[in-house]
Length: 257
Image 1 (cartoon, rainbow, N blue to C red):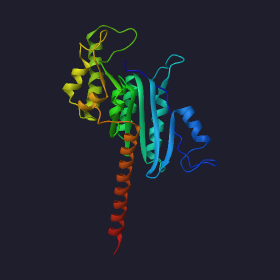
Image 2: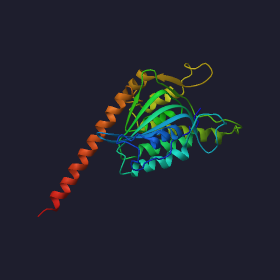
Image 3: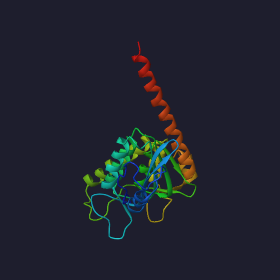
Image 4: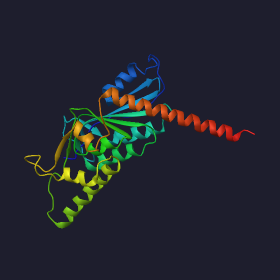
């Protein structure tokens, strides 16, 4: 199901007393415990890590005890990361069952619209609405054991069985297909084929694909683990820093007599 998770709030503050330059200390440690996020100082700049886990929680609260990522936490966090002068890159760690469609797409659109370097890493699973979240970053990775479930849109509860309802489902599905194919290398034909596959799951329509297959299909950019994702993010941060330095140098040259 395209469903809902509980998440991180923004913690971008100057280094506090008792913290070292790596960003470690009581405040950062508590941030990891409470929000599932962390800000780390590295030689190439500051990386903010965002975890999207469990169920993506949207307009309605998930049942008590469910592990969720709340979109009302993640959206302002992403805005703060994008606007902060102290953060240079964003690493997104995904292990989600899916959740609320509109909440998931809202987060995905926010990530895809960021100027700062973004890298996603699928760990465990990036299922359902987790697929758009995985491809939203500038570069995406998946571990070899990572899984992704692709299936048609479906809703829980009472559904009115009229043509308008099915048309509504189709339009939502089109939005998801458009986003995924716009932000990855997979063709629309291949993605819809995976979504509507009837021979993969016994009690459902759709497909489950794993790490290497996701890369081969063009859904995910690279197969790799944490060190690979971080190496890519560091490279992107260095390139952005060099580009900014060149632009500043060009402005200074242009302004000189």
